[in-house]
Amino acid sequence: MMPSVPQLLIVLAIVVLIFGAKRLRNLGGDLGGAVKGFKQAVKEEGDEKSAQIEDAADDATDAVKDAAMRETDDTKSADSKSA
Image (cartoon, rainbow, N blue to C red):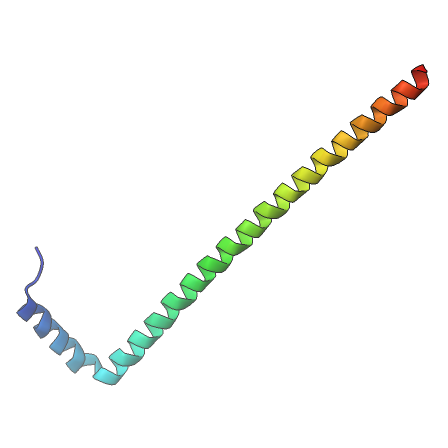
């Protein structure tokens, strides 16, 4: 069950009396900075993983191209030996 608006206002008043408005403002700023830092770290991690995936895809493409070139070279060598 949700508390009513008057109950929330009473709780807020008690918290302000206990901690003080300045301390609550500092706490809010610190919490906001922590959330901002967390979001930035998550974004950087996602960018890093995307870069790793792209690098792996490029490496796989290069490996396939190299294998195809070797196969072509082997075929040419076999043709020249049989001729």
